[in-house]
View 1 (cartoon, rainbow, N blue to C red):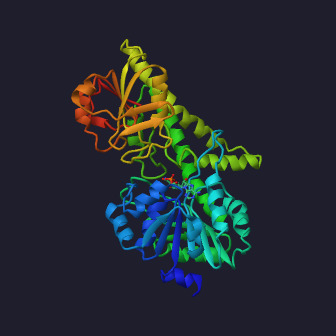
View 2: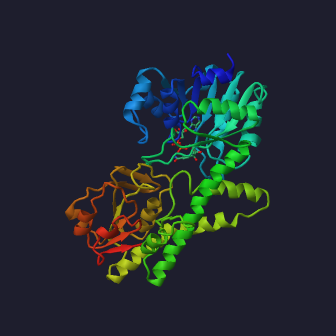
View 3: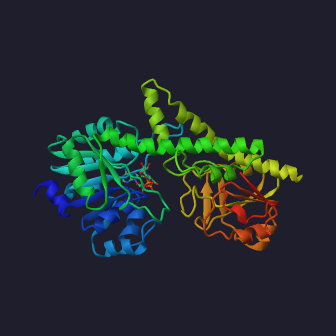
Length: 432
Ligand SMILES: NC(=O)c1ccc[n+]([C@@H]2O[C@H](COP(=O)([O-])OP(=O)(O)OC[C@H]3O[C@@H](n4cnc5c(N)ncnc54)[C@H](O)[C@@H]3O)[C@@H](O)[C@H]2O)c1
């Protein structure tokens, strides 16, 4: 049977490499669509959890995972040998930054080398991990062709960026339009044959680099606009106006304005990282991406700005930071998720500890925090606990927080998210 027919009739065996925030929801979607799906991950712990039907990604419903595992439609392994029997593979491995803040593509390299050793014809391979423009054509393709197989005839290669927004109740893998760009038109067509079975709307683009660039445009757009509004928050504070009031009023304009909100800094595996993949690539081409670098400077200075505001507020009350009791509310990088990767809360806590503040935190989604030399457990949020604090700092405005209760028992609150909003007593709630 022709590969496209096998994909369209959902008789293909599909592999998902990397079973994290992106890979696991995708694997469940493919399995639910009727494909036989095998997930491959280097983490034995994750593999064991999946095979026992245990879910570890909040955006995946427990029952859906249990259903596809129990029916035998999804299983996981650490052994790449399964690739020999797969018709299609989606690669969803991490693409972090190195210590020198340059692209760390080692996970993509490892995954592609493992696949190349076990490739056969015909096969579809799709890279989903966000990376710099040219990754699919210049990096992935030569590795896969080491197998001796030819792209466009023996195997089909495409880039299709994941756009998942963790914690978003309205949009998920299935109903978020999917960009697809192949190395050749037949590669795009073959990848579309797979994804159209599990995703409602596909957006084919002219080639793999165009698909890579779409993802980078989306996330660079966010990083730059968040950088601009963070700077606006600093400006408004200096002018003595309330940035939140200004945004609310500005967004009544029915055209030409889109609200972005300031905060304690960027977090997560995408917005703080992806634009730097693009600026790195452009540096290689002798071009400096000034907007990206400026937004990065502003955004990465926000945690230190928040620490400065804490010191200033305590100082106004004649309380030295050394020994001050400070409670951080919410340490994940955004509301209602359990992910602390790149969260600004981490560097804020570290800096406050260096200043010898007496720091505790509460987060309903993170019972324990281990980060560099920081080891803390989430405190119980009681009236007494709040009353003992010199300042409570809202870093993540989880929707489960009972703001009137928090405001009632706290002496002073710095709210970096406008979470307390108008439910606060203006004499004790200070906004970013
Ligand atoms: N998290 C998001 O919101 C999001 C959104 C869109 C795109 N992305 C992109 O998707 C990619 C994956 O991100 P994520 O958040 O799912 O990461 P993650 O860390 O949650 O998951 C990645 C998984 O890959 C596994 N892995 C690492 N190296 C491997 C290898 N060589 N072989 C097999 N498995 C391996 C890890 O053990 C982990 O389970 C990244 O490029 C990221 O930029 C993430």
